[in-house]
Length: 527
Image 1 (cartoon, rainbow, N blue to C red):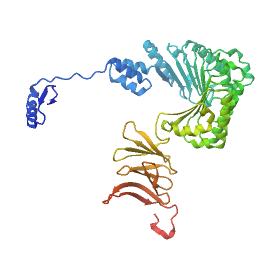
Image 2: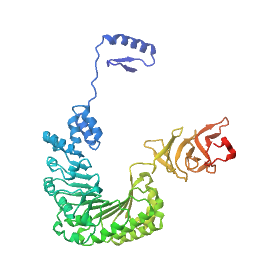
Image 3: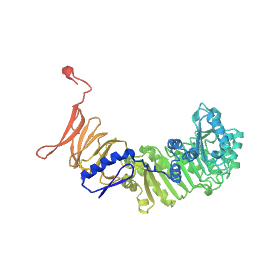
Image 4: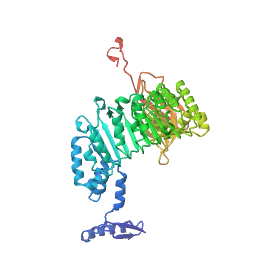
């Protein structure tokens, strides 16, 4: 038996296969519907608790939160609350409007946890902290302050503003970006104004009288050990060693974590080891992370050498982050190999329990590929189980932009081609697709991919100085055909087809390239 249901939710039972009876019953229903009261089904409802939980998970998505606030009245309070947990101030008008809004809605002011102030050329008034506004935020935890044109003058803070900041007793994280101080005392007074400061991030911060670690710091003993809770320090493009030396001297306990970001070479690291941490064991950090954005071998060799010179004392954990490195050939450079050997010796000498090398832009499915290369540079650490390698990118697949994609006709395989000429063959039999094979070639940008009708062969067009058509065997990744010897040809497309004798053929559409110089004898036929 089968059951058919129409919009009025009245069941109709008929025998399977009885088409005539089904037709007659449907006709009778058509006549009955106009005189039968319509019984509407209850619309689906999402419990309030579930909706609010979903909105909470969208706390970092500003545009989606705004859409939720405009969807219905029931979502408005929660969406508004999440929108106000983090506010951004970029103009004088923002300060005024925020002040009046929080005066009218004191309960919303209690929701603010993070404030980001960005000074630009239209708002010079904001070169001092807007104390009056922030005094309305009793639960402020994170304060970020950025200067748009930091290299065009000093962004100083008046003494009255610094005294007013003492009202923000709950701030635990402070980030300064592009700020310039006249004296180290100005920076020290600012940090003291946050008594519960735990995390400090300095991005391109400059202090005029702390360009060296000389007598200036010796005259700042009054600020020593004033930051009781400071445990994490992140330095990005900030002039060492004076700034770092001042902050470390202000910590009353060793730093749990020290980040040194964007280290182009090892000179700044060498200065840090000699001027800051060699004075007292109580000031040495527990864990240190160095980050480098360079990709050429010379900068990386100097970077590794600087880290080696830094290691004059034990650490609980050492992390080296290569931000944009995507090519393992850098580790084959003679200078890098020598630097890795010296670094390994320093780690073993000071009994550092673990070295982590993180590759931020390396794909997770290439972990084994990177591990083989790096483990060769640190063989003793690898043998002792002290080496950890992380490919931090959450994406899978190519290291460069994907430029072509194809699917096998039988649905077994997918193929993707990238800008660097690599091809990855994926299994499409289950979700998510898994990588079966990666094919690398010396040819460039892949513009077209095409599977044969059986899925056993894959054709690829590489667009470089001269287009190259290659055919690869899917089962083992071996190259069957290549047109690399054919010059002055532009290959536009290709297609597989099978003849009457069950033979597979590949046809390509190609046009001759226009030469740079045309001989006079060719006349108008040159191109």
